[in-house]
Image 1 (cartoon, rainbow, N blue to C red):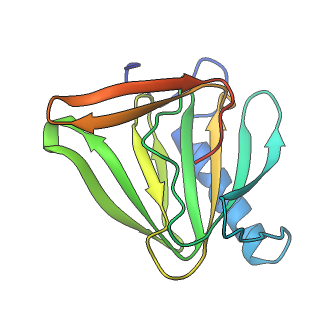
Image 2 (image 1 turned 45 degrees about the vertical axis):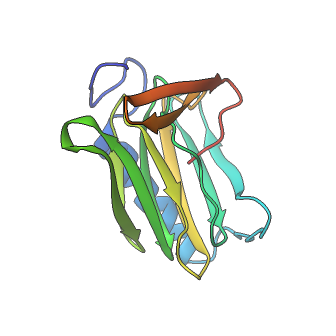
Length: 161
């Protein structure tokens, strides 16, 4: 796993990333961005990619999830615009997978090495804004068993979440 850091060599730190997701979430609430909800797969659209940061808007139908993953060499942040998502995050010093609700208006940042799965477990659709710096290029996916966390695959076709 990469070391823990709150800034990147080239790009934004966790505070500015989180502030950016809050700003874009306010734009979504104001109606500036349409968010379709696709019942078959998560809908997402890249809103920004300037070399330092990329920003994604995601629509979640009930049951849609990202799979357990990290964000490669990127820091990340997200804000839930509407609905309720659930984050299952890898917390090795706290007994493995920990779960927490992410309600409308909730924002959080992700340090390097953060491994999580985000899922819409509610009956209503959800919308979230995600930002990564440097832009998201690689993600590694994981499984957990009694022995711990295991890499399953890595992809350079990174999808937000």
